[in-house]
Length: 66
Image 1 (spheres, helix red, strand yellow):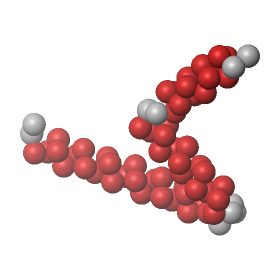
Image 2 (cartoon, rainbow, N blue to C red):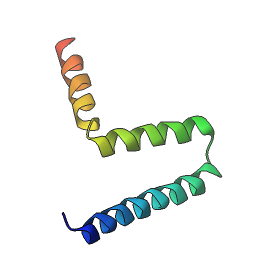
Image 3 (cartoon, rainbow, N blue to C red):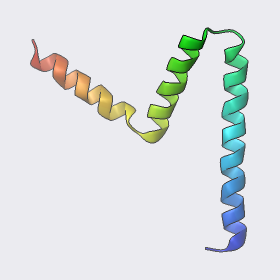
């Protein structure tokens, strides 16, 4: 990969991290820490791609118990 593209990739990642930090800081001033931690956890699960698999797990589990 070209060095310019590697630098550009890191800049995009840095901008995304800073953008998320600004949004979380804005919400932190209005929410309790437990709600904020829940939102951060939900965002992490969604970004990593685990949200849909966890949803599917609970959906199958609830359908199997009825």
